[in-house]
Length: 345
Image 1: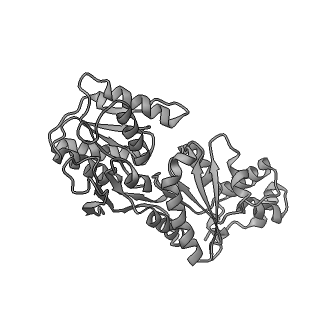
Image 2: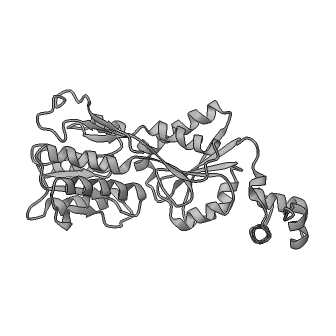
Image 3: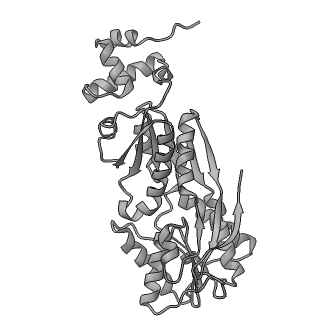
């Protein structure tokens, strides 16, 4: 049987103290970054079992959100998710902290200021940045994101895109556009997949310009406005739009109002996420509802269960409001009509 590699063995090879090796492997402060990386590299080469560093109980969790997100724009969704994580942390006696991070940041240094025992990454992260976080050898769970070999929890985005588009088709709409800020985010790609699935089943073929991807501007809202105006300026503009999230759908409502277009009479609209503002808009916004706090609770559960991989899908629900149904009974009240609740395994 191969003798297990000890911290003392690594210290001898690197010419440093046992304490320095322990700090490096646990990601604790007090070392130069080049020293830390050299120790980790030697540990990996010698086959050190990093799982031995795990304590019996996670005491500190760091919630990470990508700096690319316009934080104020994203908060209506991610704040509810964060509350779900915090609620579950409270039940387990775990301290929770928050960090916004980007690829240009010193990821290791920024993360280790919080001295976490585990990480939860929410929303879009580049593979390169995820790779840097994985090198820290901390338990890591993704939420609203997928990457091979990592545990994650997501709403059933494909089913949500399908439900939204099928609803528009059932309302008699035949020129249905899809609006997105980008297709680089896993969740948005899955929603677009559901959109295409519903069109395929209905034997509807949309022109390529009906897939409106916002130009890569620093101001997300302005880039969405440009994409929406391009759609509405087409010789044959869409009679319905499925927007990748509610924040984008609310921008569509504003642009339509400025152009004198009536929603839903001239153009029907469905969003995604069911943020609070979706029910307050004029007209109230049809959307795909996600249990955002449940997403957060399940993310922490994956950490506590020490899941190594797999994608846990949570069900979504179509909420029909006045933005997509001219004759909807909710057009005056803004109350919800529950269309369906679907669970995909």
